[in-house]
Length: 236
Ligand SMILES: Nc1ncnc2c1ncn2[C@@H]1O[C@H](COP(=O)(O)OP(=O)(O)OP(=O)(O)O)[C@@H](O)[C@H]1O
Image (cartoon, rainbow, N blue to C red):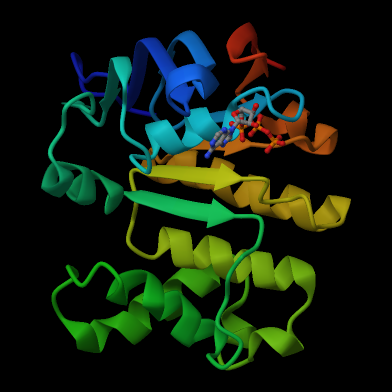
């Protein structure tokens, strides 16, 4: 992918620490995390339950305040960032979660449209349907635009959730266990879609997963243990 000289990495974390609780029950859950993630890459964050993966992902996704250390997201320092600055950054991120949270009474296209409506920043509302249809085409579901989630398979529902995360052209996609409920082939399809976006649009993906079946598809695998990043490998 072409990269303008001097462009910073979209995610740059430096000496990040995080705690939960207060007083005697305060516990540290992230210790001195330092990493930089290249644009257009797909990075997997893995590790045992309770090792801090979701905490790190939500810190990077601007869903939790930075307490200590530095976290630069798309060139903006999050430590001390105002709420409006954080809201503006969140609009540049597409989120995909394991429980895909599709609305049962809305069609695939209407669910994806919601991805634009919640932001309310994409100008011409007449174009929302076109944008939603386009995003569903990208995930191979253009023949299911008017289906309700109840009439879609698990893999198809997850692809609708991917389309909803992608419809606003996010610069970063953050996914928490997006393939856990899927069979191997459906999981692979979801990851391949995100990889293609990296190549074609430079979208950077950070994904938490326990799913060993998809490790080989990542550009980079970070392993966490007890709140620390203990290994950083490139599978290929
Ligand atoms: N809101 C919270 N308040 C207090 N402690 C928390 C909170 N959220 C998480 N923790 C604790 O912080 C540690 C890290 O949790 P985190 O959810 O980041 O781990 P994880 O690696 O994502 O785990 P899993 O794979 O089970 O989702 C755990 O010990 C957890 O019990």
